[in-house]
Picture (spheres, rainbow, N blue to C red):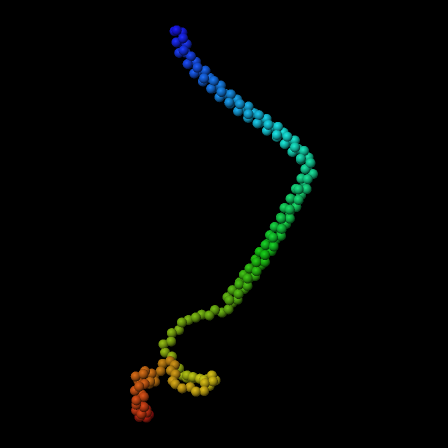
Length: 189
């Protein structure tokens, strides 16, 4: 019985070791299967690449005559585009040259006008103050008849006027005593 008890005690430890070894082997088997799968894929890709390479070489042999035509056509298109761009650029250059010529003409005209202005005598302005001014003769010419005026009535004061009747209060006084003004004027003369 004693043997049975020890055997029973050792058995669970062996089972655990056995189970761990089995799980490790299963993990290794999975790794090997994935490596095998990757190797199979690489071999298949290699076969496909060899097939494509052989097909490409055959296509190259067949299309070697067509490629120069395609290249020539694309080159001709590019040449046509470049020629169009060159013509546009040449027209722009011509426009720029024309503008430069116009600007040079304008600047030469400006220089000529500046030189002619320098040759003209300059005018010197001086400030003069007049304190008194005496007028010997003053003539006033009215051409009212030429304007077509048939009748003109009223009074027009231009400038300073020292005549009576400027202010309304004086005007009223003159209207009340018209005879006294005539007498004053006769008495003075």
